[in-house]
Length: 107
Image (cartoon, rainbow, N blue to C red; front, side, top):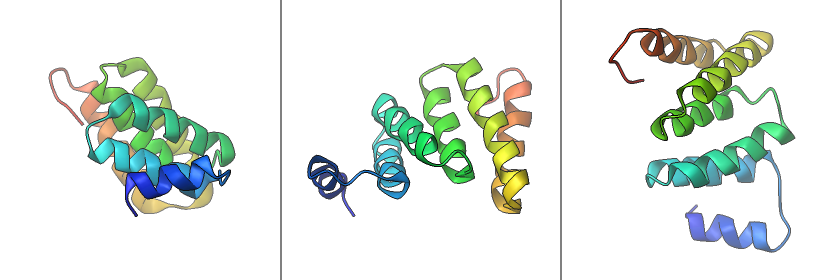
């Protein structure tokens, strides 16, 4: 679905983790990192165990040079992934955190 379609659903009163994830991913892909972060923060407010949303939230924050916030999102996402048994998200978030720890490298 397009961002416009998702925004229309939100305007009609539909609001849930999946919708916010879709909006966050759409805005992230479009390079609108602040909007992406806003929607992804709402997504994880709906579902704190949504590890994929934490992963994208970290990326959106990192792209805004909010490194500490990105790290916190990824640490929280890593915990959520581990609790849920989401091995793929756990692996990807672990890679982002390792890269963040190496000076001069981007996730």
